[in-house]
Length: 366
Ligand SMILES: *Cc1c(COP(=O)(O)O)cnc(C)c1O
Image: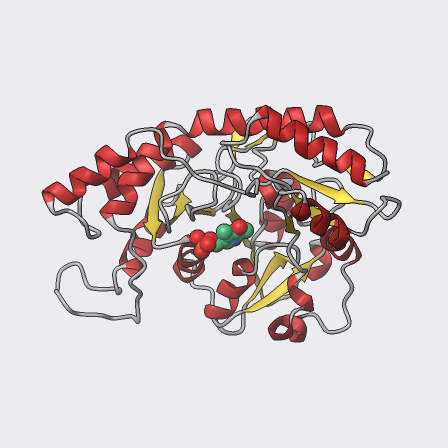
């Protein structure tokens, strides 16, 4: 079976992790945590990085750092991984869903303003499957209404928006280093910001909110959301290879595009002229005229030894979230979710495998 993702540690991962074990620095103290935070934030062009135990806790920490809580509303796209909305609920606030735009599959800036109320505090655009959201109009609207913007960049490490890396385009950003993300620490996450006060507050909340001057004194209910030195060691080694990983993913996408261009009823992934997609997941849409339904297509791929994944369900359609979107419609997200497929996207794919997958897609559509 050709897997959807796969990870191979071909750099200094074993050496750095071994060093943690040999020296005993396996918990959240140790040089790699700081090194990973400094190097990853610099890579993205942000001043501060606060690592976290995963991408979800990082996003939650960002909301808590900004003081978002009960009575507040946070705008999120409905077509994203569920964590983007869950953290809003963890914070006691209310998620407000927005439809996607057909061009980039991301939150549609044109529909944003209609969702803003006097309770709105923040917007969380997501760079879905590796393609940046259109940040300029989002930031312009947010500034006009005095709202925070947190990029959910969990799927888009290294992607470019108008020549700038994602993660430093808003007030804060959040990344995931889960096993299938662009780079991984096994589990792990990070928030980035240029704001020194938020950096300090996030570190404090991440470590149980313990007083810096009075040990075991807590003036807030904090969290243990720390990344370990072992995980950070993996991250430092992965970061040494991030440019190469992205280059390979983009080469793979170019080959898929070349082979699949012109195949009837198959829509290729977006790349706006202002964007550089990192193709976290190389994704296509199976349009209605294709020989098989989307699910039939995925089953046929599986029979031929090719794994794939359906797009996310729009969050507002799932039981715990229906209450947040009564009577609202999200036609673009619904259509994308119904037609979308993630194809094998591992950096370990070979050109022969991409040819085989593409030939299979052509043949199945006949
Ligand atoms: C992976 C992901 C997350 C959560 O990251 P974890 O490390 O799995 O907690 C959040 N948002 C998006 C869009 C993701 O893809």
